[in-house]
Image 1 (cartoon, one colour):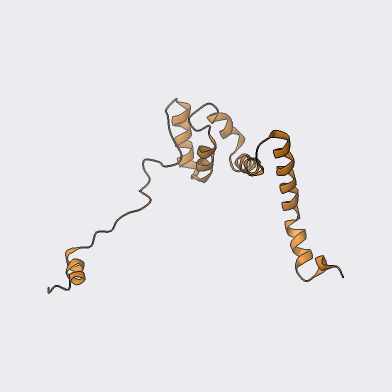
Image 2 (cartoon, rainbow, N blue to C red; image 1 turned 135 degrees about the vertical axis):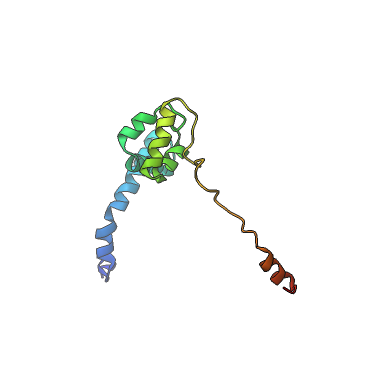
Length: 123
């Protein structure tokens, strides 16, 4: 009779009910501002994930861009602070790939013994 009362459905609605409110907020704000719902969601997430004092510190710096804010939110606090200090000093920096981080992909070169085994050679 009432499908929303099926086992698990009522609990899930109670648990995730505010997801509909967030979606409604994003839709409403997008309509009023002329940007997409996804843009509103991303900017809201940035505001949630990055403390207000950091947002104030980086305003007008090379980190004051959406992609940089996303990358800053993923950094560990010591790395984040180091990048922010450099940006505040006027340096053109990025949080997307830090110079002290290893490359994303590394190539493993086989040693001589592995090369012989692959080639079917004799030791």
